[in-house]
Image (cartoon, rainbow, N blue to C red):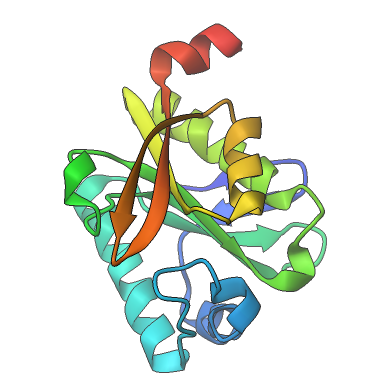
Amino acid sequence: MVTVETPRLILRRWRDEDVPALAAVNADPEVMRWIGDGSALDEPQTRSRIEAMEQEWEAKGHGLFAVEVRATAQLAGFTGLSVPLFLPEILPAVEIGWRLGRSFWGRGLAIEAAAAVMRFGFRDRGLEEIVSIAQVGNDASERVMEKLGMRVARELEVADRPVRVHVLTRGEYEAAR
């Protein structure tokens, strides 16, 4: 079972008891504002998404980690790697993404978790490139991407919403370390 640890976080695979906590994150309209069409997700939808995350782990050897706060054992949300099937123009690609509950914003946890996932993707999974996608206007996510060393590669539309695709190659990642 793959686990990645940081000073404040444990990135781990999903458990059944994670469903209510992630469902609470997914039910918050402010958290979901920049995700897809902005619709919140209920508990059955969240359970289905977690099942899909676990299937990607089995099929691809990577996926979205549950982000657990080490000091409290609270589920903060998720971060990890997935294939962005919703954007066929950039395939084949592996995307880094994250979603944290509002009470965990502004503490640097997204950057800490995502930096650990970048290291995992490049060093443990041998990826040559990692992308990240943000709707135009989602400044907080784009700041995380910038701090990770990613650069804007292109701008596209997904379901009539403009998005920016950010990229970091393994060479760029290694050169910055």
